[in-house]
Image (cartoon, rainbow, N blue to C red; front, side, top):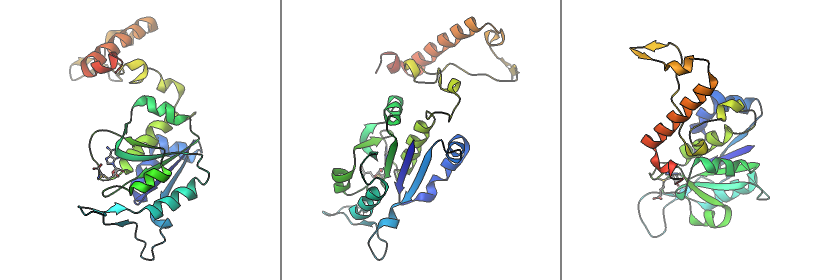
Length: 223
Ligand SMILES: C[S@@+](CC[C@H](N)C(=O)[O-])C[C@H]1O[C@@H](n2cnc3c(N)ncnc32)[C@H](O)[C@@H]1O
């Protein structure tokens, strides 16, 4: 899986160099390219944004640097090109599996008031939002998508880690415990220490249902 992120703020992606995703990149399981849109501007002052036609507050990202950057990273339009946007389809776990079908994802991060509409009309396959709120830029949403998709790339996590996770089978995960057996008067449930895997599985299933019913009843209705 190759993920290319187009941004005016490449330094913001330091978190993807850490931990599980950082290791997967170093081991070559994921190819991650962070591309600075400014490297593609034809403006002699390296300008990439301008005032909106029609007036109004803020700046709009210009089409030329973005168009040239997209054409450079995906010349034959083989990648799925996604613009992170509050107007997009709201990101959910099922979409992780959709995105895994593509060999190459191009994630375009807007900033300021967003990008010129012609970028979307000419170059983008779909707009994706990470929730109904407005952020200053698409950098955090791009990291959310890169992280959640990368976890499912073969070899990034052990297969067992992906079983029974929240949102599999429309359930949230059961409660997890580790040592010590007792902490501030609270004890790890006896069944988890019993060694009886049948009973442990049944307890976990029951707990997953209870947690889902309490926190996200909409999932049980398949919403
Ligand atoms: C301040 S926002 C622009 C908001 C835009 N003017 C609007 O009202 O829809 C700047 C950029 O942040 C990104 N962004 C903000 N909120 C987002 C969200 N919920 N999901 C995905 N991207 C988001 C987009 O790339 C957007 O172009």
